[in-house]
Length: 308
Ligand code: 1HN
Image 1 (cartoon, rainbow, N blue to C red):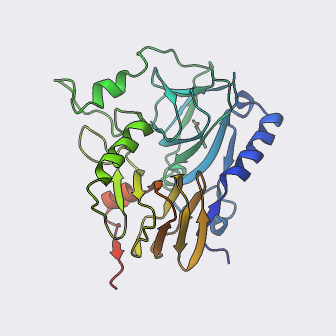
Image 2 (cartoon, helix red, strand yellow):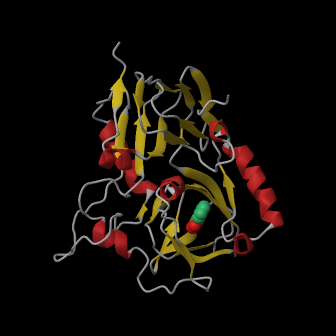
């Protein structure tokens, strides 16, 4: 019986991806992705019971052609810089640690005009769409969907603590589709001076939809947290199985009694309702995502802090 907690080393995954890059182009593959399959959920292309995760490679000069699907996707950039994704006619350049959203049924394509390979983690709600038997996808028929908006327009329009005066919410996902790491990291840096640490989470923030204050995506909850050097969290468990990426720092996490040692860009997963303890050897930043928002909407979500 395989356990549902697991760790993937980024460096190993990067080697495999670059080998795959010699076998097939991004266009041929449509998306060239190394799937992070939970060893406790063999054969299902799932990292948790409800979520999919993969590592996608786009080499210099490549394009991943335009398509859309009913599943939501997030991207979290782990290698390279300066490649772009385009969502509904707006391009965004992606840098390390940027959190990027592809809302349900939004046209999107990726391209890399930089001179380095670009790798990001894909997080999708594919098993949720499958469970509801509501999976749809459509190709655009050309590499790129036409660009109709200025790069940076969404962040300026919706990401400056203002909204257009007559804005009406029509979409479930956040209208900001790139949450740059530089901004989120700076916020954590300023807040940590206050030295207020949650025993279970250190300093943990959630990425929000500025329109309604809810999570940035309808089915996936993304988070960014800082653990100061030497911090050991109190045990915590919740019903949302969670995918973690160490964006900075190193340390270890004990998940259901099993210890995993991680460094920058390593990815690990904790299953539902198993105790988690993180220990940071250096100042650490963890990105994470789970299906919490979906569980909360449906009335299933619960959490527990170490009673000790
Ligand atoms: C997809 O559309 C992307 O758009 C990535 O980059 C991974 C995995 C399964 C199905 C669709 C993308 C995907 C995917």
